[in-house]
Amino acid sequence: MRFLRESFIVFRRQLRMNLRNPAWVLIGLMQPILYLFLFGPLLKPMAQQLGVANTWTFFVPGMLIQLGMFGAFFAGFGLISEWRDGVIEAERVTPANRTALLMGRLWRDLLQLLVQALVLVGLGYWVGMEAPLRGVVLGVALTLLVGGACAAASNALALTTKSEDVMAPVINVVMMPVLLLSGILLPMTIGPDWLQRTSDFMPFRWITDAVRGSFVGDFGANAVLWGSVWAVGLFAIALWWGTATFRRENA
Image (cartoon, rainbow, N blue to C red; front, side):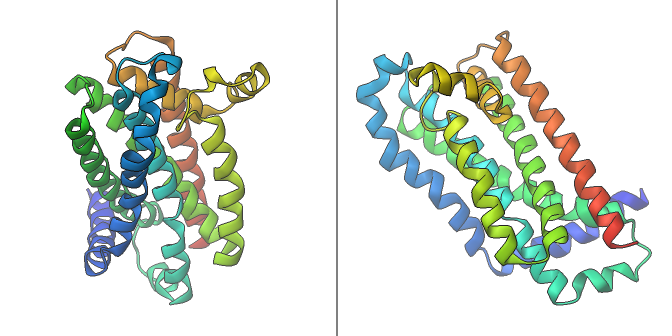
C-alpha cells in the first residue's frame, strides 16, 4: 500500500505538469492522425496487393504501435529537465521507494498513451475500420505494453546520458530501423526475401502482426501469440532496466 501511495503521489505531480502544458499530448497525437488521413488513403489502391480486405483495419494497428513507440520513447527528455532542475536530487532525500519514482512517471505515460490510442481507434472506426471490440481491447493492451517498455527504457536512458544532445541521436538511430523493419507502414511480405528474413529478428514486427491479427479477430494465430510474448517480455526487461537505473541513481 505504501508503494502504491508513493507511486500515486509521483503520478499526480506528473499529471498536473502535463495538464498545465498539454501541447506535448497534442503533438504526440498529431503524427499518427496525419498518417491516418494523408498516408492511409494511398494504401487503398494497394489493398489487393497487400492481401487485406479493409485498408483501415490493417493500417490503424500499425499506427497504434507507432504511437506507443515514438510517443513513449521521448518521455525521458522531461526527466532530463527534472534532473537538471534538481527535482531528482530533491526526491533522493525523501524516504520514497525508488521504484515508485519510476512507476509514478510510467503511469502518467501509460494514461497519456491510452487517451491517444482511444482517439486514434475512434477515428479509425469513423473512417471505416472494421474490428471486433475484444480485438481492439487486446490490441490497445499490447500497445500499452509496448509504450510502457519504451517509456521505461527512455527514462533509464535519460538518467544514464543526462543530456538531450546524446539521447536524441541514440533514439533516432534506434527508431529508424525499427520503423522500417516492423511493417508498421507496409507489410514486410511485399519486400524482398532478405528484408523479410531480417525483419524476423525484429520483436516489434511480431508485435505489430499480433495487433493486426487481433483487429481482424484471428486470436489463434501464431503471430498473436508470439507478439504478445514479445510485448510482455520487452515490458519486463525495460521495467527491470528502468528500476535498476533509478535505484542506482538514488543510491
